[in-house]
Structure formats: C-alpha cells, structure tokens
Length: 606
Image (cartoon, rainbow, N blue to C red):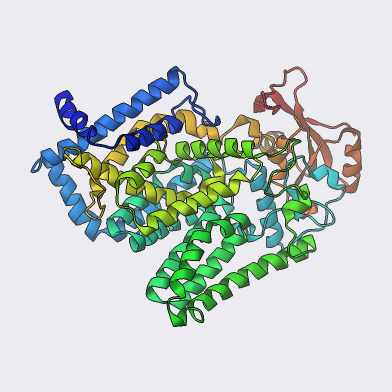
C-alpha cells in the first residue's frame, strides 16, 4: 500500500497548482472537527485533539485515494464487477425503488429519533410557541382570549404574546401544518413527512440541473445527514421552510424548461408558504433563482403573461394570507409578531439587541464563522469536512451554471445572518438549515470530483475536467466509509448537541404529576434561572382553553398563587420546585443544569 501511495500520490501531487493546494489545506484547517473540538468557537483550537483530528483527515484522504486507485487497477475483480453492476443496473434501472427506500428510511429514522431522543417533547421555546398556536388554530381561531392573570402564563423566553390577545410571535405557516398534524393525531408526523418528500425534490432538482446519477447520489447523501434527521425530528419550523423553498426552486426550474404555467403557480404558492414560515429566509434565498428566472423568462414573449403571471398570482395569494394574519393579530399587515413581542430592535442590523449587547460587524463575522463550522460539522460528521468537497469542486472541476446558482443561494443565507445579532448552536447551525439540500448537492458533486481527481492523479498534466462521466457508486462507497468513521461521533458528540440538559424541557413534571395521581389541579412551576426555561416543561401541555384541562401548569409567583387558585374553584395547588437540601447546578451561561431527581412536587397548604 505504501509503495502505491508514494508512486501515485507523491509524484502526481507535484503537478497540482500550489495555490489550489493551499486553499484546500486551509479549508481542512478551518473546519477540522472531531468529538471534542467544539465548533462553537469561530476558529479551530490548536491542541492535541486538533492534531489527532487533522491526522485522521490525512489518513482518510490517503485511504480514499488508495480505494479509488485500487479499484481502477483491479478491473475484472469481484469488487470492481460489483461496483459496475450497481452502477449500470441498479442506479439506472431501479431509480424509483432507491428513492422510495430513501424516503421511507429517513421517515422512519426521524420518527425513531423524535420518540427515543426527544421523547416527543418540544424542547425549545420556538417549538412550544408554534405548537400552542396550532392548538389555537385547531379551535377555529387566529388568537385566543388572554389567560386570567397573564403573568402566570408567561416566561422570559416564551415567544408568546398574551395581551390583548394570546398567540405566538411566529408567522402562521408552520403552526397551520402542526394543526393538521394535531388533527391527524400527532404533530410529530409533519416534519418526518416533509423530510421524506424532500428526498424526491432533491432528486428532481438535481436531475434537471445535472444528471440522474448525481441526483440519486444527492438523495442518498440527504438521508445520511444527522443535521437533517435531528432537526426534522423536532417541532422546529426549519424543515417545513426548507421543503417549501426547495419545492419552489424545483418547480420554477421545471416550469422554465417545460414552459408550464401550472408549475409556475406551484412555485409561487410554495415560496409564499415558505414566506409564511420563515419570511426573511424565503425572500433573500430566492434572489439568485428569481433573477435567473427573470433573465431567462424575458427572452420569450409569452413568459411575462403566462409563467410570470401565474407565479406572481400564487406568491401574492400566500403573501396576502400573511398580511391578513398580521393585521388580525398584530393590528398592522406589515407588523410582525417578533416586533410585538421583543420590540423594534428585534431586526437585522448593527444595533443594540435584546440581551443587553450591541451587534457589530465584528460580531457578525464571528457568528458567521461559528455557524459555518457548526453546519459543516452537523451535515455528516465526516472526518473530511463538507467544505473540502465543495472547494475541491470549484477548484478542479468544470463547474456549471447551476453550481454557481446553488453556491449563491448558500452565500445569500450566510450574508443574511451576518446581520442577525444572535448565535444559536442548537441544531448545529440551524440558521443555515434552509440551504441544506444545496449543500448536499454540491457535496455530492464534490465527491464525484474527488473520485475523478484520484483516478487522474497519475496523469502528467492535470486540467479542469468534466463530471459528466461520473462514478456514483465509487463516490457512494467513499461516503459510506466516511459515515462509518463518523458513527462514534453520532453517539458521543452529536446527540448531546440536541439533548441539552440546560434546556430543562422534558416530561419531568408530567411524570411527577402522574406518579402522585394528581387530578383537577394547578401545578405552579418554580423558575430556576433568569431564562425560566423550566416553565416550558409544563407550558407545552397547556391549551388555549385552560378550564377544560385536568391539570393547569402555571408559573410560581409565590404569595400571588392563591389568586389564580381562586379563579379556578375546586382545584388543588401543587408546587414543582428544586429541593432545598440539594445544591442547584448552574453552568457558566447562568442556566440551571440540575437533573430531574433534584426536584420535587409538593402540595400547597390551603
């Protein structure tokens, strides 16, 4: 093995331009990650763990290159014939079955993660607020009357508006989908289903812009992403926003190719739905595709009337729904719930934001680098960073127009959140989730580029090459090898990123109430820190109609608790609190990390 590597790699690497090698090496240094290399930092920490991670990267590169060279030099072997069979028969003749398997696989694994990891509990205040809004929609209203004594049903980070109406700060799109899930028996079915359908959209978009085999490879990579799996296993709105944005891009591409106005209508409706879920993401990320559509479309006479008209009709219809919702809830079509809840500073730009600090260009750069590293780490947890494959693609392959369009979409996402003052490491760079399909597609293209580069290293003059004659099964083999290397990271590193003890939201209070056999009661929850996140463990079970609940969950306000009890006659009062004899655990961020066994549920004296 050593002789082969020395003969093919050492001699051939000398033919590569030094500036390209330098950029590749920098991409490896910046995004090198492992089990302990916390990507929350905007730069890699140079320590023993970093060096071992870099060593693993180099070993992986050598093994991958050796695998390609060995395969090409062993034509006629069982391994080579198996790859050829898979590539010529399975990839070409069983595309539909592969896609159906991928969709079913990701649907089932997301359902399993929702149940086994998240325990079907909305762990983030964003999830709790949108689930509550879905319950309001299910009652047939856009908002609910304010609860009695609203101070008992608010917390520092609850993302809810309680006066003069009771509703969430978010646009209505995702809560509407959750309402459908509630009607079907479980809101947890929504994101897994949309993720499964996204596999088909990734294939369609990639097939139209590149080729069938690259599209299949992209679909398979999509279901291997722990970022997709874990985020879609939650009740966060990112998966639905991604799905409708992806649907809009896919259908407008198909519409322009086939001059089909119904597809243009679907594209406008889909982008409008994404607008109703994550408004800024939908507008900014669509800019590259929108400009392309206008440039292409105005070359034909009938475009302006048919295609553009249908697209605008669909988009304006959905935008009108958003404006109507804002008017009915916030009192102004252009006023969003975020501003009502947090004030005028809850917007893009360099200014003072909630939390007491000022967002500056430097902090924007720091947050951007953090999000890039988080996203790269969460995409696959491969030893080789995703950025490496994308950089490789643009340095060595003959890129197409769509490579640059997809890169521009990703770039728009990065620029958008450069102006956003908050950094959130939960869900591994969740602010970039909308562009996950495009990262996956470029990564699959980069994998194919890597395979072809390894197969061409023995050539004396290496120039930019085309990826039309690709080797998807060999690329998939390398992806499988990388995924095997990353399995330990899924368990020891990735899962804790999504199951953080300092979130404090779980079924602890529900279990405590069930063990005591509590009925017809009010459980007051003692806040543990300034963020009052523990209240979410009760609030996610509340409904807009508190009177109909067997147990009402409220914030502990000490001497004021009897006032709430007096409004709900016949109910007993209980207090869920930290045990006085047990020391409270507070982390460096000021958040409580005391385990559930450090709490107790006691009955209040009448």
